[in-house]
Image (cartoon, rainbow, N blue to C red):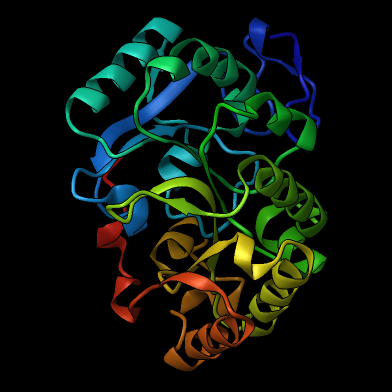
Length: 294
């Protein structure tokens, strides 16, 4: 890979020469953890667990990230194409319900080439679990190779996106990206056992003091993508543990607490009124014990 323009940051880092861009990722796959993940949405985790591959590095660097050890810190091991292919085969042998790539955006081109090779041999869905901050041109490399898209939709307001993730254009970029994802996979399709075969799951994490922003996101998704084309995963799991670790002075005071039942409940109520189907978290999930040990 020459200079990297794979994501909306367009930082132009020459990773082939060891230069690290905004995502802080090297040219070769930097993988922090490979596991059977039983805590993802039920339609992709199932009984066997999602065969999850966590890549290090990220093009957002959210200030409250629960995976900051890998997204900011770059913890992990370098894997070649052949090694990653072998790990995917091992996950399949262990009974994985799907192969899930987590925070893969900065490796889009490499993963597309790998999937072109191995996709015909896979008999389980491939899942692209990303921040939603992606280029349409990059996503088109994955057309026909990814069965299930699992993006975040984090922010509606540009000032909030700038403050928390250094990406004031997040809403515009994510909406376009999710539109392309929806075009590729269409309406959700389920197997007879209830597992998702193909489709789009949009995750949204309700943040403390920002229920209005969450509601704006739901209305936008319904108007622009259509609730019938989306499985919504509405999350209440925000916990201040990870934010406090990165900011001892707690400069964003609202991030120093958990989401209230009222905040989450009011967003969930709107989601139901708009006709969204999917997954709603219990308030008890706001605990760092549910974050994998990287």
